[in-house]
Image: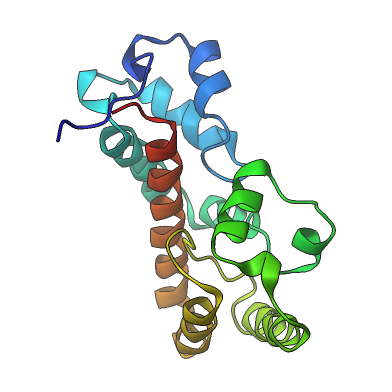
Length: 175
């Protein structure tokens, strides 16, 4: 099966066209896409994996405070913003795809408790690439990751954010 490609090829786009297409890949953090473009893109960045690697490197190279801004830009899973319809289109689709819009009252209460405990412990929201997951697996991951230390969990959140970006780019690619 041939690799999926992004069309038009990202390396051929000027800054404005690139931003119109990819500024929203990182949740409310268009600077990641902008810096990836500014660093220079080549044909190797015309696949979801290639562009995700370039954007992920921007985030990896960012100061810890900027990384925390990106983590904090993510909504709580099954949280108040989701219930009120206040998520980005991508987050809405991703959470619904994992069945988070179908939680029963007990599950919603558990998400609320875990969201609060997680934020109290780490100072940022729990981030997980939920595409392909269900709410039971997400709740299990929540419980497990609450045991991590702060640095490990910050790294895990960044890994998950980069995974979300890759999945979003794959959704925009052509076979």
